[in-house]
Length: 178
Image (tube, rainbow, N blue to C red; front, top):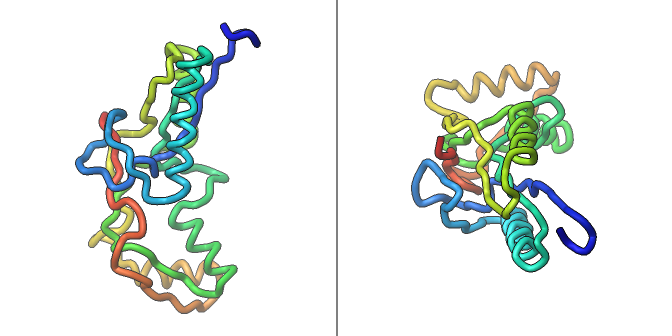
């Protein structure tokens, strides 16, 4: 209890706080080393949860959500390509194509947050919310140029495309410990 009554909450954080992990799979105690301002600020939000729990007794839990997907979610590879194609008139590919992610459907994220909010002790504990399976975003089994041709035909544009870099701009591999 605080002087304001009982406060309980689940802080949702994001995977970028891990940065490029030293090893896989990633577990909750893994070292945090954000590569972006977004990841840095998510880490700061977690630190505030820990401090408010310690100092004021605020009951919090922290859910680190891995790569969520589902209807209405943005910022995944296909959504981002479509947005860039329509706004910029060009498709820009970033990274090497070897990057991996641990994808989890939005329904499963909601279910996990519900379980955390109802069944966990709320002592600023961190929980990875992930499938525990790795998926390579692009690999040798995908003919990327054929995919782009189909994509361009679907959006009814003949857009130029180019590979901007052969280096990953973010974490190269992400999978949670099962």
